Length: 485
Image 1 (cartoon, one colour):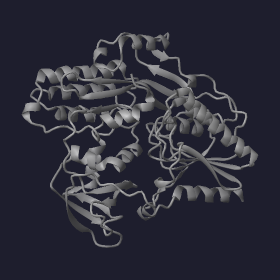
Image 2 (cartoon, helix red, strand yellow):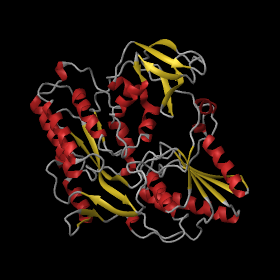
Image 3 (tube, one colour):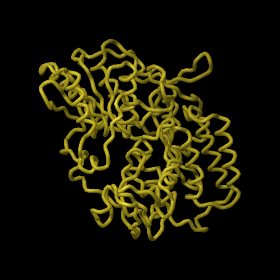
């Protein structure tokens, strides 16, 4: 059994970026009968347990995908080949908490990497590091690799990245971090890479680089992300007498005891908003750009310091069944703990199922030290899960001005809660799905399938990114100054 808190760790383990496979030789192949058994279990898991299976893709289309893929399993395939058939199906579900990965023992598939690290800005890929630290390549846009346009490469890799809805923001976040891994798994692993690049006003040029056996990383010197290391993933600062900046990099903390985690976080919030009152701060900036999620209740606790009146956070928690599972022996759940879990599931008069045990389903109360002034929230492609939930509620209640990029997580609903992991009996391919869909207590989205959209879409240029210029924060502080006049 897995909680949503560790879902990102699970997905990073399961997704192809960390789930490399051994050489795909015939000796490692599985028979059609074995493949059909694993495929049947995969479909059964999703159709019986996934709480939002048809939210993004219509049932008829998904059924056609299942059926057409099943027909491809008529000859021997390796685990990697089987995985590569499942991956595009999973990504079309529009659920960033759902993943598929290769057996953890197969970690030697990629042995030749793209020799550059790229950053995606406005849909374009820029070199931010290379294996030889060549300054002439820094900041160059990559137009093509080995003759294949980057637009085509990006579209192909998108097919293997699960994200919420039809949102591309979180997909770009994954490519920012692991483009070389996705390329090696889903495009090619050549000995040489021929890059067509564009550098400023110079004519487009070709550079030929040998593959590297190790991933290219970038020094964090001078980066915004290289802020001083803190004992806690949250902090507060006062850049001037009228403004406070509350930075929350994650909605969880690495402590052994759950009670201790809650106590530390609640005490931090209370101390921050007490300080804001004492200092008579007029404007609050909440920086969530590095925050990929955590405990669901922590988002609601934060919003309670912004709320002007009692509020709902979750509208409902949708589940699919309270019946015993015929495939539970292949999952990380024991029958006893699963039966204990379903005690909190009720059946509605219409025959649907709802989970009732989450504190966020209750009416929430504002905190006594709540902040009543203008709020500015910095968001970006990494904002996911709990972070996306918090942003949705704050946006729907018109409680903040949002600055940055679209959140990586959804707006109207988020799939999460307890997770179920399945290891298929033959190929050992892994699957992970969320067991609940949290429908947010928000107004209907203006852009269905997307995350929370910023009021001011601010994204750095490549030169600003390389120099470490914090354009989102600078814009926000300038906006506060302008609004004060």
